[in-house]
Image 1: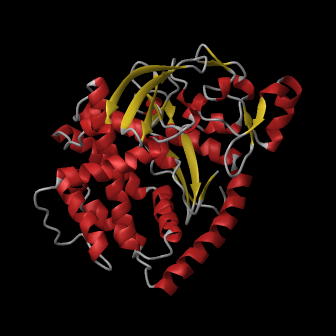
Image 2: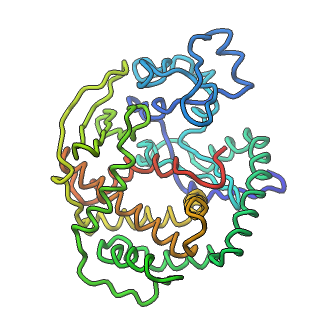
Image 3: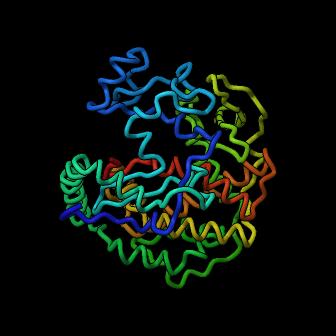
Length: 372
């Protein structure tokens, strides 16, 4: 794109395919853009609905209001040639913040197979088609980010994102250690502007860390409406939903079928699920994911959003390290929960499955920029 730099580093050297039997992306209610409405209004008017939420938009209906898209039959799209832009873009996300970056949704199992089309080439074509929308978003994001940095300067909490990211990069392996995470979280509360240099972690208080991780994970799973709950597409292509009930202290494991019905598979007390340290090969895959997050513009945008929401009370470095620590704890708790229900372990497989379960939620987190 002329005069507009796009960062493709996250998709460079990657491949992506759409595996038969998955359909995960068809559980996410796709927006129908203005230029796409004519086809659906003419051919499938009853399939158009207003989405729920604070900013409703015209979207395709879901089966029984909570299942997959009404056009998904036998895990195949009945309107594939006319599917909305959202469907065409998945698993690529174009984030506009300080710069434009293409990010890859790791909840899609098709990006883990090392098969399919060249991800960079496909992303470039998607960006080309979205150029007009991206340029509008760049103008809007520029104003929002300028205001954010101005607020940070006035509050005395402005940091250097490049330096903060460098520190994380140098300590990525340490962020896989619960003891280190515990120390970082402790220091974010007592240090006005913390650094990772010189942190010497001692034995971790696993009960305290477990409580912190469980609180974060439970919050994301405590959805009254299953359509808003995180979905984990497992190795057998089952759509798993874990619904947390804070009052009873239980998690119900449900499986969503192709017709939009939920079947209960199991239940557990949250007190029975304990966060555990990953095995060495689990730590390695977690470290790689931490490195990806550390370079995502949407992750930085989420940190900035949290700073804004809390009134610029925390220094940027504290907010960033704290957000990353909470993220890793969430993944470790989800890995422990999947192992409890499915026996996935805490090695490479277990951490990979937790990342697959988690990443869509991470990309959906609030940010001061915008996805196009």
